Length: 636
Image (cartoon, rainbow, N blue to C red):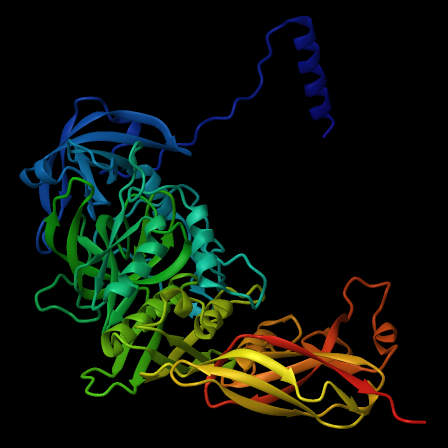
C-alpha cells in the first residue's frame, strides 16, 4: 500500500517539472462478437448485403442492403449503422414498423438489427442496432425466477453453437425481483392508472410514433383483436407514448395455427401476447438472432422494463401496409411459445423454454335484454403497468360490445381479486352514465383497477395476482338523485334528543321529494353548536391507517367507502390516532397527547375523529350540504 502514495507523489512532481508522465490508460474491452457476426468497427460505407424479414406468412425473405455510414455514439455506448434497403415492397413502404429486429448481413456475417427510422421518410433508409450490443443483452445473466415464479430457462444450445463471453458472470440463484423501471411512483395505497401512464410517458424518450425530425426506434405495432372504439382509444392514450402503435388488426391469441413454425427463426415474426383469449393485444416485431434456447429481437426496447416476463408467440404477417406517415406490418400470433425475459436499450431477450405468468380474467354482464354475448374470458400479461391498463381496456371493451345503448345507464360491478398467499378481496364499483357508456377515465380509476395496480406496485414485497372475476349489472335508467337542499328541522334541541334533517332530493325524471333523516345527538354535545356534513356514501372514505405492509394494504381494499347507495351524516367528535395499520377513534380528551411519543418520528398520528351515521338510499346520491344545530345545555 505504501507504493501508491509514492507513485502519486512522483507523478505530481513530474507534472510540476513539466516532464512527460507514463500513467496507466483504461483500455476498451473487446467487442462481443461471434464467428458469424461482424463488429460495427468493420462496417464500411458502400458495403452491400441483405436482410431477412417476413413480408407475408411466416417464412423470412431477403431484401437488399447498402451501408450509408456509421453514426458513432448515437446512443449511450451504442453506434447506429445507416442503411438503404432494396425490395419492391420497401420501395413503396419505406421504413416499416414491425420490421424492428430484422437481421442485417454483410459478407454473410450478421452486423445487427433493422430498428430505427424517420417518420414521413420519403426513401427506404433505416438505422441498424449493432449486433455486439444485442449480444451483450443476450449474454447477460437472468434470474431463474421472478417473484417466486420459475422462468425454467434452458442453458443448453439447441440450434447452433454459442460462444460464451469471457468470464461470463454466473446467473444469480433463487428468486429475484423484477426491474423497478415501470413501477408506479406514488403513495402506497393511492394507485391511479392515469398518473401511472403519465409517469411512464414522461420517462420514455420520444418514439417513432411521435418524433419526426430524428431517427428513433421504429414504433412497434400493437395489434388489437376483438376491441372496439373505447378500448382502442385507451390503448392509444396509454401505449402510444411508450412506442406502441395500436392497430385494429384482429388476432387469434392462444390458438395454434396448423402448419405454423414450432420454433423461432432468424428474421421470423414474433409477437408479445399482452392479452390472449376472447380479446387480443399483441406487439409485433422480428427475431434477430436465435442462439440455443434464447434469442434477441426488435433491436430496441419495447418498454425499457428491464427484467420482466411476458408471454410470446410465433407470428404470422398478413400484409405490409404502406403509409406516408408510418408503414407497418399487420399480423397475428399463431403459436404461443416462450417468454420475453429482458427488455433493454439494444434489444428484447426471449427464452423459448420460459413460461411467463398470466392473470386469468372473467367478465360477466347482466341486465342487457337480448344480448348475444354476456361472458368474456381472457388472460393478461402480469406486469406492473400492463396488467391494470389492459384490465381497464378489457372491461371497457366488454361493456361497449355487450351493453352499448344510446340511453342512460346505471352500472354496478362486483369483483373478486385473488392474490397469491394473501387470499381474496372483494371490491365494488358503480357509476351512472348519461346518454351512453361510462367514461373511460371513470373505469380506469375504478376501485378494481386501483386495487390491481396497488397490489402490483406495492413498495413492500413482490405480489402475484392469480385471477380476477368481475360481475357487472347494467340498468338502463339514471338511478341517481341530486341533493338540492338540507335543512335541520329543529335548529335547537336539548341534549340527548334526536335531530331530524330534511333532504330535498331531485331525481332525473319527476318532481323533487323530501327525505327526512333521524340523527342521534349524544349528551356530551350539550352547550355546543354542531356542524353536520351530509355527503353521499360513495364519496366518504372510511378512516383507515396508512398501510405499512402488503397485508395492511389488502385489508384496506375491503369497503374503502361507505355503501354507494347511502347518505352519510357526520360531525366532529373528538380525536383519534392511526398507527401500524390500526385506527382508534373518538378518544377522550388528553388521550392523544398521552399516546403520541414526542421523542420518536415514527409515532401514532392524530386525526380529527368524526361521528358518522349511515342511512341507506334506493338511488345513488350526488351533491353535498352542511347544516348547523345548537344543542342546549341541560337545565340546572
